[in-house]
Structure formats: C-alpha cells, structure tokens
Image 1 (cartoon, rainbow, N blue to C red):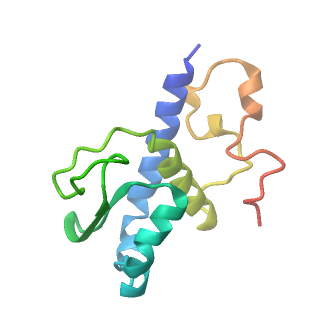
Image 2 (cartoon, rainbow, N blue to C red):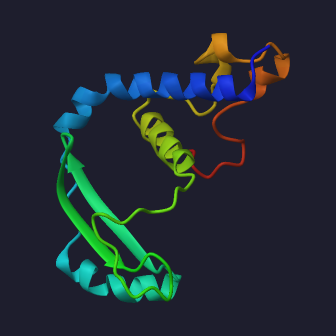
Length: 145
C-alpha cells in the first residue's frame, strides 16, 4: 500500500508531465507582462491595507528574469527595504501552484476534475478501494463550469 506522500508525488509527476506536453501551446500564448505603472503606484497602499510589509515580484520568460520589482520591508519595523538579495522565509507555495496548474489543465480539457486521481497515477495510489472516490474537486466546488 502506498503512502499519501507517494500518491501526491505521483500525482504531481503526472501533472508535470501534462504541463510539459502543453509547453509548445504555452509558448504560443502571449507572454506575461509586468504590471502597469498605475498599479505599481498604488501598490504601497494595497500593501498597507493588506498588512503586507514587503514583497518581491518577477516576470520570467524563457528562463530569464525580464522584470523585477521590490517593495517594502521584510518584517514590519525593519528599516532596510527588500531587494534582489533579500532572503524570504520559505512558504508552502507548492499547493497554490499545483492547484493553478491543475485548474489550467482542466480548463484546457486535459485534466478532468471529476476523474479519480488514482486513474492518473495508479502505481502510486493506495490499494484501498476508497481512493477510487478521491477526485481533484469535491461535488460542491465552485470551479466547475
């Protein structure tokens, strides 16, 4: 019987494989553009409202950083601003990135939110029959069309 970690690794691997297949289609899409100047001018106020002391944003195209912006401080009360060398604390960002990838693939018809996840990675799923009911989205998910 596989562990939950093995199942998640297998699912992530399958998703990554689907993303690689979609790479040529992604190259044809319009590249991400840096935010407009009006947004950057309002950013400090948005950060104040949200209680965000600092942030770094970058745009990467074909493996190269083509734009970056640093705003604020690492921690509230710090005097030094953030910059390209700022060491940010680690965050659990894999989940939203994985979710965004899964929803992108679902919108393109490559990934079915209602299909059991074990169908995508049968060798990594636990042998428990209950795993046949585990899908990417619950019945009440608002992400369905």
